[in-house]
Image 1 (tube, rainbow, N blue to C red):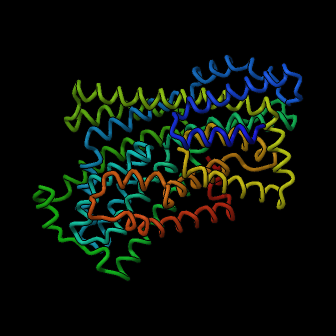
Image 2 (tube, rainbow, N blue to C red):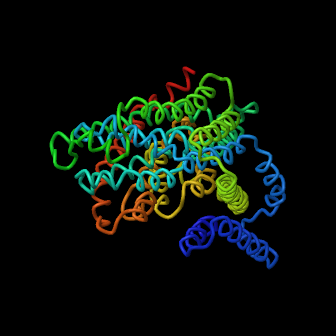
Image 3 (cartoon, rainbow, N blue to C red):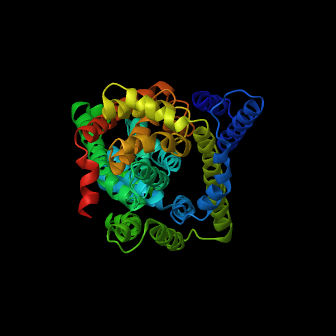
Amino acid sequence: MPLILFATVCAVLMLGYPVALSLAGTALAFAGLGWLLQSMGVAVPFEARWMNSMPNRIYGIMTNSTLLAVPLFVLMGVLLEKSKVAETLLDAMTMAFGALRGGLGIAVVLVGMLLAASTGIVGATVVTMGLLSLPTMLKRGYSPALATGTICATGTLGQIIPPSIALVLLGDVLNNAYQQAQLAMGAWSPKTLSVGDLFVGALVPGLILVVAYIIYLLMVAWLKPGAAPAADRQALMQELGHTGSIWPLLIKGLLPPVLLIVAVLGSILGGIATPTEASAVGAFGALLLAAFNRQLSVPMLREVVYSTAKVTSMVFLILIGAALFSLVFRAFGGEELVTHLFEAMPGGVVGATIVVMLVIFLLGFILDFIEITFVVVPIVGPVLLAMGVDPIWLGIMIAVNLQTSFLTPPFGFALFYLRGVTPQSVPTSAIYRGVIPFILLQLGMLLALALFPELATWLPSVI
């Protein structure tokens, strides 16, 4: 029954029904079926008492202080998107690096990294970078495959570079799974995992990926100069409408977002603020940046708050639906089933981890990171953590895995986002070809994390 429940949810989601309602509706239907079969005398392993804890689950979700970071980080990201910070930043980086071979690509990677650290929203970063940088890259003679691949890969950095919303949600779910695993092993004063731990653990892998992207672009520019030609700085300045020294533009474009990132991440790393408090600092800082760029207005604020309310409502409704799904899954004995499956797998904890990563990678084709975080991780997380897997390492592996899945043809979400803003003259096949080298780099990052877990665990242990 638990496996049929999981398969039914996936089927309903693929039919296009809303995620939250699919999770809750399917779970309720199966709960009713279990109760009905039991009342008819059929021996179904359904423990209805699990359903009694649903009100407490909902109350716990709505009063969770960690999840308060979600609307604040979303507000921060939408404010930065509407206040043209990305546009100014890209102009500055283009002026700084455009005269080098592969320089425009490097500028896109660096701006994407800063946007990922500022917004933490994959779709917003991909679409913004596609609209702003793709026309310039194509006009300057860049290979369509290289240009689109660079933008897609850079956009997915929002999955791993803190303060990522994915890491906020993943941290909260993994913390619950970690405590549940410890209680199952008899630890009555369980340790906790904070979102800040995941933020710190993601820093080194995220920066390694950025460096790997830049090295790849430099290699392409050196081996195939025609695919990533240098641009004339004077022509770029004229095209962007800037004259004189580039330093005022660099300072105006680079300094504000860097200060905002330092304020958010620095307050977390320095132990001054929790991620929730830092998200408030970030939202207020984004508001000041919008005012500084003269983009702050009542209509703009209305649009920003409306977008934030929509995203936040979606996240919390999915959370409630996922909580109901999790309870019904456990009521049918799903947790024991997963435990037995993992224990019977060849290779022990290594084999179980590989299978989980493969399943999450494939589910990334049809589900967003929110659904995977709230549906899959609560099922497999406690079992893997009880088998001795480090929670920080597991969280970073899941984040990088999903980042790779969102980039993989033919179903990667980042590809669909970019296709929506790419000119018809650029074929879809060019986008698919362009992302393959970046997928290989990310698979290399996954392998490096598997072989050297310290890449994710060393910095949190030090801090």
